[in-house]
Image (cartoon, rainbow, N blue to C red; front, side):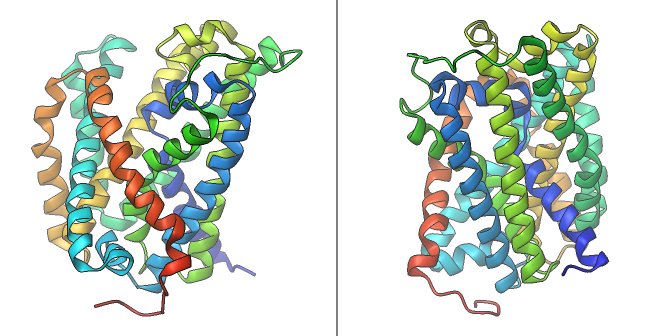
Length: 355
């Protein structure tokens, strides 16, 4: 049994995991379209596989973090690969975290400009202020922010998808779609999707090894993974109900929401912004906790400096940054994904911190 304190921590850790994955790409529906919907009914098999992988990898990341009493992902990397290889992967992860934060800030500007009719710089500044505030409150700020923001955006995504299915109805027969999605095959597409989305969660979950006991940590990873898989499956079903017209839109969920009711448009804009915020916070925390695993003033300083350092990326369009950087992030994440996938088969993990 989990006591009240552990239950509260379980909720915070689960929300942190889910928040690190559900970014602007997920909330817009574009990721789900490319990786699952375009594979037709096979996309549902991919969603099932993704759910199992998210649960397994989330639980394993928390298990390793707690087992090593890790304050940052570097300690877990050292355990998996040894110091020399870990140094290279460390640099790659830092670059991904920094680049991802820049992309999210640019996305905040795009939401303000395209959905709300506000100046681009205002959206960027608003996101910066929220990230600054959370970083200044350290780990407590990270967990609290996710407990507040993640349920709202997750409920929003699931509500829009559910309303879309109710509005259109399930297709009489699941469509057979002869249109290549990402990867060309539903199985490879599902693997790439999980790989693409695990770099930031691994960095964040690994850094929480000193905050939880092993049971609570593993439960949070597994529960978070199953929630993510369920959300992927629900959006996939909604997309299949609206196929083929949904494939012609840059923001599929916005199209589905508008079909249900125009009132949902501002709700969707808020949803996208919340998704951007939680991902930006996760990136900033993962970066700062790596350079300052003990937290404190150095952690806050690293997080704030990073936010300012990535501002030049916001000069580029959000879509351009996604098109150029995300594929690179995905293939880099594939190395981390494969290592975590086979780690229990070849690497013994003993309690205590590796030195």
